[in-house]
Length: 272
Image (cartoon, rainbow, N blue to C red; front, side):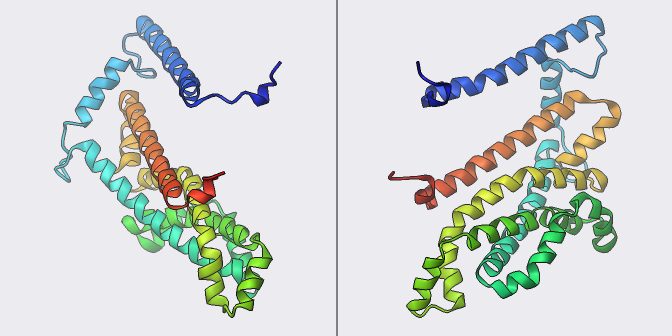
């Protein structure tokens, strides 16, 4: 008899197994929604799929008076702009610091404790400080995302670089490599797949920080729209928006994975 841990589903089986819980969840929601609306047609807690479809039609056709764009388009573009800039700043910062702290022990001794302290501070707790210092415009929202994920990524990349075999650095130094060349020629090529992986793991927290910032001070954005309509208990809008955010996150994760597999196949076991 085969052990459970030895069963490895094929691709088609994996897709089917992965779809089953999702279909089951949708079926449970459908039954619960229909039951609540049968008892109370005005129920807003569990809107029907028809109500959510109508709401989705409205916010994909109506225009935002402030931007003259379709509501969903305006919200999506605003949120993706903030998210993209924040992630870019955090990624660049983590890459530079990760290389520096990982390859230079003196820098690790000097800056490592500060990075560790910043990493344990709840980012949302500093949001009021960011609003006071940077104002209520885009800078504070972008800064929250960058501050929220850069320390985690930095610590992860630093740990990866310090874990590289010491023989690689010793051989490079024997061939005359200086500190800069050790970082760029030895550590950086091996670090890139890890950087993408750290960015993938940071996408979830980045969305949380973005929505939190938009909910507090914004006039456009996915998080702003969700918190705007919650006062009306408009679950028929909130749930499609949450589903849209999830879809964007899934697409971003798939894109990063594709980049990693295409650019660094050796890091994914290619050829083994």
